[in-house]
Length: 436
Image 1: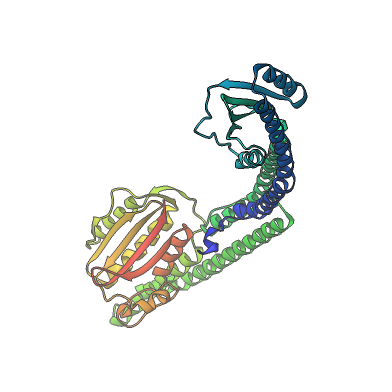
Image 2: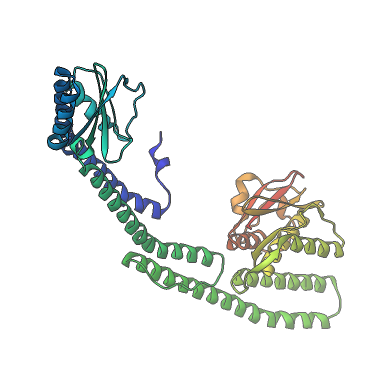
């Protein structure tokens, strides 16, 4: 058996196990030693004393089995031995034993009675809370003895177990409360890091132990550096884009004033391509950070994209799309993600299909095409920014290789993923997973 599989995964459970398990082992050892060295020895001596008294009374009656002697023996046992004695004439010993909850009780008393009595006997330690019922077979019936329980067993065992159980419960309660207070700041830190990775605005205050406070402060500083880096990158590319648009606009104006020719047309195409590249750069630089999350239906977004493509004269098979795919996210970012995937599929294959599926915790959207596809060894490279794979999928294609990278970034920023695989149509399948 793999012991690692039995160890809990959570920090709370592990911390509780580290504290409680050694204490539990120690208490079990102490309990065993207590019962073995103290309780059982004391109980054995008490049981042997009580068994000796029972044997004495039984022998006194057996020597003179008269009613007068029985009355004298009864008075003597009650006054001096703390035993209640009664003769049950023509009675027999019960055939069934009544077993105690703690087997040590029966074992100790049975051993003592067996060593002191030659007659057959029967006893019950469970029927009466304050007495032990002992019966001995004698000529003409059965002698029944009721002995006080503290005469037969040590009374400290139950009190010891009660105190031990109370201490265990108190210790476990204190441990649970203490560990929970220590683990909660770490859970908040992990949740804040996860939300920040999805592009959400998070507020977090340092709390907990000194180590957790240091980790929280380090996270807040890292978050600030990342946000400043994103803002600087966005501002830089926005400035570059703005500065380049001005001369591009002048070039377009000058070309519009020239006589039409094939060279002029090619120059206009180059300018349009440059403007498209600038838009892609700026979109990639802006990322997914400026838009707030909200509840939305991914199926509605997909159907809107299908309708937009249909107005442009292209068709997409949406028969496999579910009626509703509820999730939460940034609508513009997700629409840009799906639009990039659809445009990428339409540029490589005449036949494109969108389908979906659901699991207990996520929704899946699939975009398939019947184009040339991508070799499996190039899947990872295809998701990198500015990647343009050769040869089949990049011949005479526009763009700078940011379509899949933008879609991948959008899916990951929503707590999901984007995976490439072989399509049933023969080309590429892009699978987008988003949490419910």
